[in-house]
Image 1 (cartoon, one colour):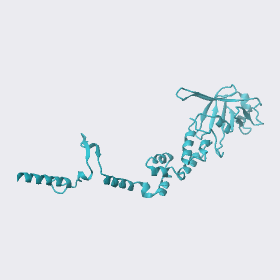
Image 2 (tube, rainbow, N blue to C red; image 1 turned 135 degrees about the vertical axis):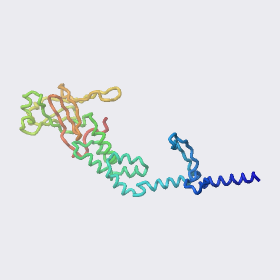
Image 3 (cartoon, one colour; image 1 turned 90 degrees about the vertical axis):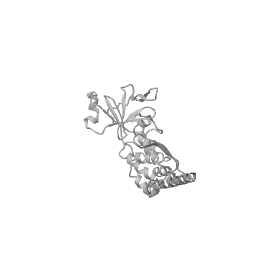
Image 4 (cartoon, rainbow, N blue to C red; image 1 turned 90 degrees about the horizontal axis):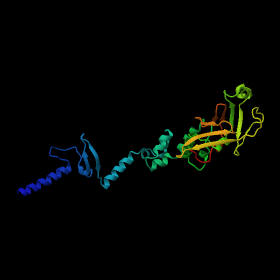
Length: 279
């Protein structure tokens, strides 16, 4: 008899455990069986650390459906999400592409990136040729433009694609400054033109240019790890000129005697600069 009672009490205990009834009235705690088997340990602070739950197939589908119902892309649709993403900065839009395959497709759309690319180009002196390739996406054009705008290594393409204004510095001999319209205010600044064969020319009425033969050289010294050790431009055998890149992506070549600056030409249809990324 005692054995039968013990067996019945054991069954009752199991039923209570499964229903959450711990013997003190109805319990608000969910049954552990509804969440699957939970493996973990209690931390010193009383919390649960490294807790792992084994959820059944049906419950996995319910969780996935719940998560999908909270996805803004599912809730609002791609059209509204494009409108929202278009209000964000380029970096935030790029990061949103990592959410899911659906977000990747929406956040990569030219409809979002075309205005951002145009906004980036606004006010820039030069537009990179590599970003003007009609075969790339607007997102790629934006990314390549940002990368090229940070480039400080000038190439022969940069030298030849632009018209350059030239003037002497205050440290130059007075004789040369007296011939320079930049200092005398007698006309527009002098201009120089660099050519692919390494030669340089000037306008016919240039008072400083004596018609002598002139050439330029771009020198780039690299370290073993690929970093630039030195980078400068030299005309003839004269003193080398440092290379600088301005915030509007224009170029400056200068030393203590003379100063060259590239004129804006953002309206060139095919862009300017190298045909491939330069680092």
